[in-house]
Length: 384
Image 1 (cartoon, helix red, strand yellow):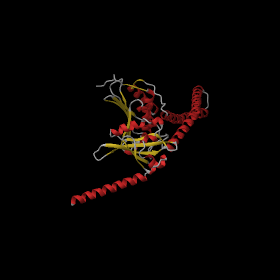
Image 2: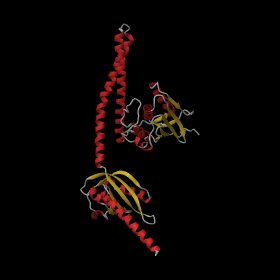
Image 3: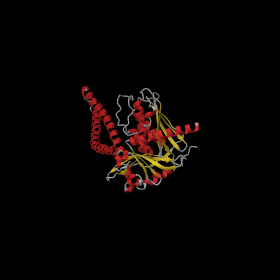
Image 4: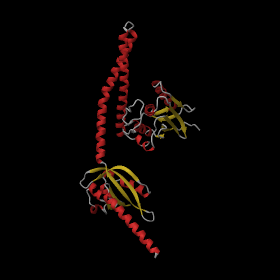
């Protein structure tokens, strides 16, 4: 008798759970459907009706590939191959065709469905319409590309004019021994103002270059000039350049005893990544505390890191900072201004990954941060 009561209770709990799950599926704003291993649709929720225009009666028993455009029919086989291996396909972007022939850009997650014995018998798919979001992104990227190109030409001309004016004023001051003290002082003030203007223009140039790189990355047109590089030399030169420009700051450098350490990559782009790390470290770290640059060998990769003594980053921000346009909120900056677009670390990540490397950060709030990247060594580079 007790056994029958337990079975009855278990049955009621299972039925309640099933009804609860059905209510969630029915009320979801995302299209949710299930299919067997042959791709035949076995369930179709209300949101799927709204999104695709087909009623459940029209789609249950039909192949899911009915929603696929002609050039994406092979996508089904690739997805189901992973499902049969018990894998989940997370948030991949694709195109689906509605009943009226229109196309939607959707983000889809597909998960295996198992029976009581644990055997995979089908798959569930959750689709979210991201067409409006993608259209907005494309408009923004087109606008950024247009504005960037329109700004680059006049800024380059302005930089040239300022440099020319600086050279002429410097020559005039060196030759005009008979100038009155007041006149000489006025010319020196103008020269100082031109120098400041040039620094501001360098900041604007960096922002424009970041936007141009963003466009190239989005269009998969970021060019790399591959060559064999001595990374020890590259890191040393970059740090020395920064130390020269920021003479009042201390930048320590810890290099391995082995020289050269050879990698295959784009020298300029690697220097760009390291420069971004150094710029951020100087920006967020107190003037009185040093910046530490370290390079070390780990198995078949070389690791370059930049450590600061700034405010640090909480765990939830350490992944987000690599996203486009993301800037950590309420982060104190030396000088009081951030002066960036939130693109530098995103570009670093893309540049390093395109050279078969990885990026990362180690940080605790209040204890500074260490930003690093790794690159594979050339096969002939050995340190064992």
